[in-house]
Amino acid sequence: MKQLACVCLCFICTHAYAFNVKSWFETPDQQAAHAMLENQPEIAAEKFTDPNWKASAYYRAGKYAQAIEYYAKSDTATSDYNRGNALARLGDLSAALNAYNEALQKDPSFSDAKHNKQVLEKLQKQQQKKQSEQNQQASQNQQQPESQNQPGQNQQDKQNNQKPQD
Image (cartoon, rainbow, N blue to C red; front, side, top):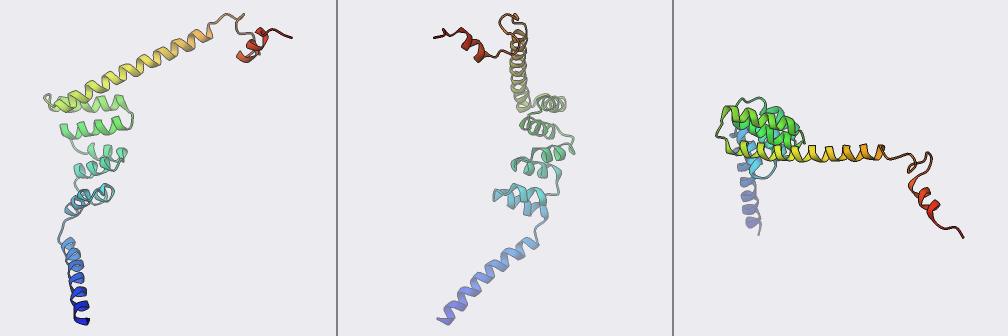
């Protein structure tokens, strides 16, 4: 029984030791790549030394502001496109459109950048239309005749005044 316990203990220790030794021989980028495969993008982002990989890890972790910072360090169409995606996630549509335009200047055939740009332009037009409608509604509410809106009288007071009294 003691021999079996010793063999099991040696087997466990060997595997634990082998894992640690293996990590000694990996670069930080390799360690980060393993973290990404294990769905640990925050750990990966801390370990990556390459700015594009670091940015991608931050993006996958939902840390879009940090992703934008690292995507901006690279001057490629892909990094501009990815920066645009992160900006869109943060709701900064104008800056995202600018990033997609920069990507398309560097690579006019970048179909994903074209598509995302079109989607954001459509979304921006919808938002502007909605805002315009809200502004019109507010303007109409302010222009109602004073006979309908007497000072100090709210909607409930108006309804109470219209009810027949007993």
